[in-house]
Length: 360
Image 1 (cartoon, rainbow, N blue to C red):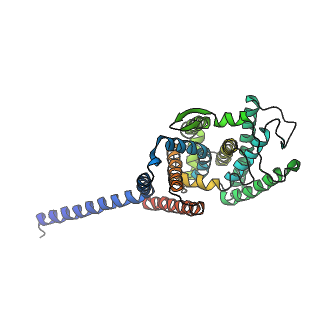
Image 2: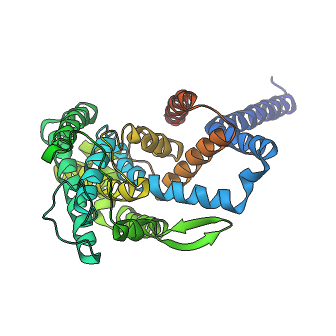
Image 3: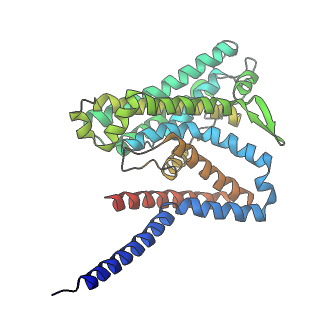
């Protein structure tokens, strides 16, 4: 006959071993899941020691302006990732819309003005141009969404195709009226002021108006994602398209609208980038989608689908810009930045997939 006391002691020992194992696993999972943030914190401390001006008010203001510039594209592409897809056309759409905005908003008396008969630039014309480029981006995004939803094509193939098509349109556009692929410059003062006009200063750095626009855009996207049927349907389709369809969700239109909204964000991003850069070249926006995708994955928008938060996207953009600002201050050359950017995307995706497999 077994000794009840011995059985109780054995059970208690097994429980202690299991608890210790679970506790160890908990800490290991926590470290791995937050590895990028931990490494970033260590990197920030190291940079602050090496370059004391890294943590100044002016440096923080510069960081805010960069985050505001790169955030709109990340907000757009995040919806595509929620649907288990991606968008490789984002950068080229931004470049095309930047070129359109630049041409429409050149100085009236600029010698190399591409379209001499355009009206004088004023606030009304600037807003009309903004709506026009958002519409152009939305139309291209709608084409992406249509082919993904209608023919069940992978977003990688669809957006790669539209990326090439859009680049061809850019090349054609830059050759109009004898421009011969020259950068579009001579942007009007009103356009630059509308985007870059100073709101206030932090240290010696002026905080431009597009920071306020980015805050409004974040509020709008948060509302769309969290408080509208469209947002709920987007997450439902991303989690399980078949289950969402059975539940009455229109998967086709949800997919089309997600890509359309993404395209509109790229159009807005191009409008801001044109004035921010001061001129628009053929390669404006090239590979910009890489930064946006990296920021989304760092911020917890999973390629597995159905997962993501606006706050996470903001955090992801902040983390990525902090890394690049720090690397620049440390004197890392631009070639190495591409290597680091690729490594960040690879590690972020690997860690994201690991979290999914652990849950599964």
